Length: 355
Image (cartoon, rainbow, N blue to C red):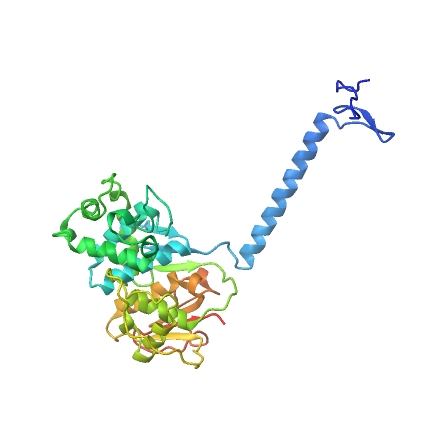
C-alpha cells in the first residue's frame, strides 16, 4: 500500500506525504501554491504587528535599550562627529578618564588610554583574550600586570596603564599609536591609530572640557539604587577628596570589596575606613565643586550620566543644566526650577538616585 508517492505502511507506521488516512479520517495535503500564500500572509501579519509595537514604543518614549552618545561641540563642515556606545562601555570609559585625571594626567594621556581600550576590548571588561589577556586593556597576569581579579577591576587596570604611560619619555608628543605601543607591547602596533578620533571625542567630554556633550537615553529598569554605593564608586574613581569628609568616610565603609584608591597600582586602599552608621542616606548625592571650575563640574556630571544605568542614577544637575532618565531623549536641558534637584549654584553636581 502506498499513497502519494510515500512509502507503504511498515512496522505500524502510516504513510507520509500526499493524501492518506489517519484514524479513518481522509486528509488532503494543501497545494504548494496555497501553502506559499499562507506563509506570505503570516509573515506580513508579523511585520505589521512588529511595526505597531515599534510605533507604540516610540510614542511612549521607550526607544529601546539604553544607549550613550558623545558628540563634538562643533564642526567646520556642519557634520558633528559622534560616538555611540552601550552604558557598559560608557561607564568603563568614564572610569578610565576619572582614574587618569585623578592621577594628574593630562587630557592627551586620557585620549591614549581610551584609544588603547577601544582597540583591546572595545571598552568591555572581558574575562578572556589572547593567551591569558583579560580586562579593558587585555593585560596579562603572566607578564606582571597583576592577578586576574585585579586586572578585571577597571580602576586597577586603568591605573596600571597610566603608570606605564607615565614612564614613557615625552609620551604626550609621540604619535598616539607609538605611545600606546610603548606600554602595551602589542603584536599589532599600528592598530591604535584608527581609534584616535573617537578617543579624542570621548576624552573631551569625560574630562569635562566639552560641556554637555555626553548623554544617555533609554528607560530605567525600575530597580532602586543606593546613594552609599554611588559615593563609594565616586571615591574609588576620583579619590576620597571628591566628597565632603563625612560622605567620604561613609563611602569608604560601604565599599564592599574594600577596593583600592583611584588608579593606585600598588593595591593599597585609599582613605581610612569608618564604622557603618545606621543613618539612612538621602536619595541624592551632592558633590561640591569650586565655582570657577566648570570643567570639573562637567567631568563629574558626565561620569554620573555614564554610570546612570549601573548605579541607578535617575537625574543629574550641574550649573543651570539637568539630565534625567525620564526626559533623556532631550539630553542636557536648561533647568526650569519646577522639577529636578534644587540648584545649588556654581558648578556643584547633584545626582538623584532611584528609590
